[in-house]
Image (tube, rainbow, N blue to C red):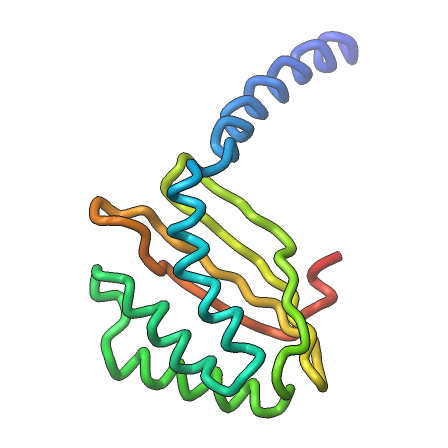
Amino acid sequence: MKRLVGAISIPLVVAFAMPAAAQTAGLQAADEQAVDALISPVIASLKGNSTGAAVATYLKTNKLGAFDDATIKALAEKVDEGLAKYGPAVRCDLLKEEERDQLVAKRTYLCQHQKALTRWTFIAAKLPDGWAAWTFSYDTKIEELF
């Protein structure tokens, strides 16, 4: 009986692995550039003191109305307040790139600040009129990287 279960489970694993592999085939070059153009100003701003403004610009690319002006302003202020504790970033490294069906891209960065490390995660979605911010987050939960 154990052999039968083992023989059945192997093809199932392969069958389920194949669609996942197809989903992470990567973006076209133009799409990669569009996603990078959305995110790179935020990452670059971490070395200065305009991160809140860069986050606001990123969030305003979402044309679905997910973020109203008051929410964007509050998030930008919260980011600036949080980062004031850590100091400017000394460096930021791209840790992980993930894509799904050429429609969703996720980028995770690890940034070294003067007083802490932060993890930044951005999710962008390809809408009919181009790439737009979907969500972003940052935290100091570095232990979750392992």
